[in-house]
Image (cartoon, rainbow, N blue to C red; front, top):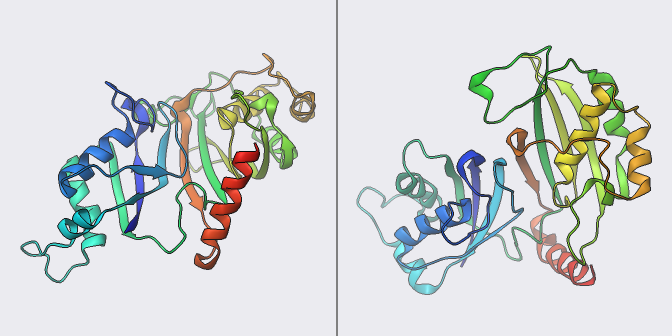
Length: 281
């Protein structure tokens, strides 16, 4: 049985998503919690592996349960006779993780046929928050907002962001990984100020390279400060090489907001297509 888990977490005190020996990670924490409930380990496959300090509001993962785990999960528990045991798993995980945990499973359920949390995804949406001299520093927001000690031109930042939309090689905005493509389709990229005046970037793409979001945001912040012109961000992209013209911003301001999937009838085909493309890449 394959189950889907929707997950949220504050990444401040995690060493990223992926399990690492001796380190506290999101995957390790969740898999340990699942094992307490199921009796044996269940591995999670995630839509996107976030780095140390990156947060998530709409992360998605799946797990494949064997017959013994399904039997244990569906055992009638006192007071749960009328509830769906798969939906109830989210509540049980919250009980295992603690009342004020920095990670939560917000929903669980049976995954549709062909669903793969990673390979069936068609896009990921991120948000990045920046407080500038206009907003000022708010200590209550310090874990999810990066502070820049200068006033910034949000209109110029928005123009620069929108100029980058489309199918391009984003090598200049990625930390390269051996034999991995840096060609991506950036579907949305824009900036606005929220009601408190914080600068918020919205980015959506079919997938993101390592450090791509934080690099794109850093380039736009340089535009907002007047250190780069609007046209410079596309010129740097087209040059195709990493540069020191802007700073890659900290992880603290970045949150994975949502993962998009096709209709249930297209899940398997999408997963197969993505796997084939990754093998070629």
